[in-house]
Image (cartoon, rainbow, N blue to C red; front, side, top):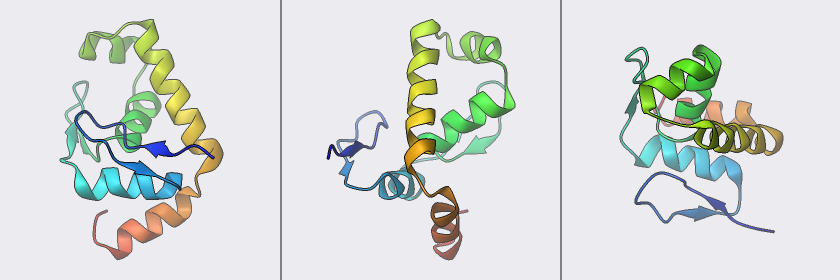
Length: 100
């Protein structure tokens, strides 16, 4: 089984469980300010989820000076995480830790 990478720039964190990677991103990294709307969200998966569920792909491309490859990569990450993670457990754990 391959390890899940943190994915946040400058972090080499690797985790056996995707849930641990999401919790790490949320707890150990600075929050991210959405360049489209200014909302502050946890870095990593939650920032990607926010961008693609709250905004259009075109808004993302313009705000982040992104291209179609950037969009596809983030869509892949979002899909991979959501197909593997127990997000309810992640949210419950983060609430217990006071991180959400």
